[in-house]
Amino acid sequence: TVRYSLLIILAGTGYVSYSLYRERNPKTQIPQTETFLNGSPKKNLVILGTGWGSVSLLKNLDTSEYNVTVVSPRNYFLFTPLLPCIPVGTVNNKSIVEPIRAIMRRTKGVVNYLEAEATDIDPVDRKIQIKVMSGNEIRDISYDYLVLGIGAQSTTFNIPGVYENAFFMKEISDAERIRSKFVENIEKASLLERGDPERRRLLSFVVVGGGPTGVEFAAELRDYIDQDLKKWVPEISSEAQVSLIEALPNILNMFDKRLVDYTEQTVTKANIDLRLNHMVKEVNKDSISANVKGEKVEIPFGLLVWATGNAPMDLSVKLMNSLAAQTEKRGLLINEKLQLLGAEDSIFALGDCTFHKGLFPTAQVAHQEGEYLARMFKELSKIDQLKWELNEAVGNPKVIKKLNFKITRLNAQIKDFHYRHMGTLAYIGADKAVVDVQLRNKRYSLQGSPFAFWFWRSAYLSMCISIRTRILVTLDWIKIFFLGRDSSV
Ligand code: NAI
Picture 1 (cartoon, protein in one colour):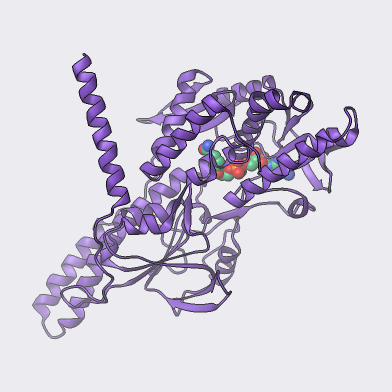
Picture 2: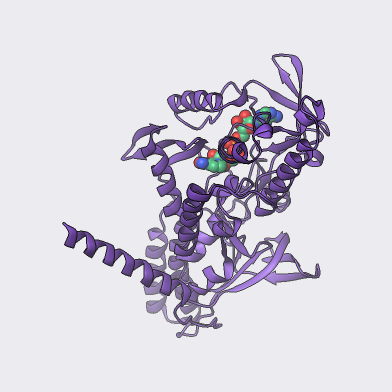
């Protein structure tokens, strides 16, 4: 047994070392060229965004078959499932980001990156207007194929005062701002006398939205207060209050009912002030005003985190307004092949910027859509080369017939996108997680047990984009186990 164990450890170490070496020393890439060997021109493929969908496409795409340009204001991929851990220092912010250049460098062909924001799209002339991040220069770039993976922004439902007084939880910069405010409040509160209402307000941490983002962040905050702050500033920790506000009668509505009940019991036991049926109607500088069964309730806060879901980006709204086929306000409409309705021949969309009936805007969906599009572009490249040959074969009916047959066959090979739901996971605090897994059309639930917690951690680790990020996240978890969290700024 000892010999076998040693062998397995040795093989594992060898595999990890080799993979790390490959990650750090990518193979030589094929430079971008204008044409294929047969003379057919390569198409310009522009990918907007560096989120789950775009990066999944990029990782799986044969980038030597297109002139690929990635355009995004963010030059890194962010592992969003662990974002709620950042403000309290459970995981370091650098551990959950991967530079886009590192991802691009590992693809087969050379990829071009522009740190810019797309501000307009002209589907007729196949042009995108971009604003370069450094210097605000406006430029036009042309595309043959465009992939929209631009994500979504936090929704406020036009509730007054949210933008001015609340923090969102979408980007690393949001998490860092929350961390600063949280630490600032603790320091300010400790300067005030016990019993001072201002001290109580400063230590009231309110999260609005009982979806996975809100629940996971409230849980992380409570963990930090109970496990770390309690040791270093006990008098503050006993007064700190975490509230989770939800408009509906339940939180985590996409989960199985049993898991919802369990989560509600667990967060309440963990001393999170769970307020269900509280529809926030207004946000003031120091308090929120909620409607509870027709009554107005005022809840003071020192820090307010807003997590009520997604709304389309401004660029998506512009596109929806310019295409008659786009009749949905919640996101871009696509067909089963992820082609944008109204611009099916040249624009594709994936991830949170789209609206699918029955599909939640999750990382899992965007990831599978990216894989699907990479396979589709493989087929499209072959079809485009044949179409070019078809143009060259004018006056040769035999060749034309053969090429047409091949094109029809290849087109038929492009199957529709089908989502395979693997499950949903959420961390609910105090080393507990809820897991709702789907295996062979059967649903299995795990709640609270150490197994559920380790399953949640292993699943998130396996979803990390690179071995580097996997190692960094593991080291962060080991570090907080032995040394606790560092939430200083
Ligand atoms: P969400 O849309 O899942 O939840 C937002 C919650 O806010 C809802 O329960 C809604 O009833 C509540 N709400 C809306 N307006 C409100 C108001 N005025 N007052 C009080 N409550 C209000 O949003 P979330 O958590 O940001 O997630 C966005 C998407 O990302 C979802 O599809 C979610 O499934 C996915 N996601 C999944 C994760 C996971 O599987 N672990 C983690 C994070 C996000």
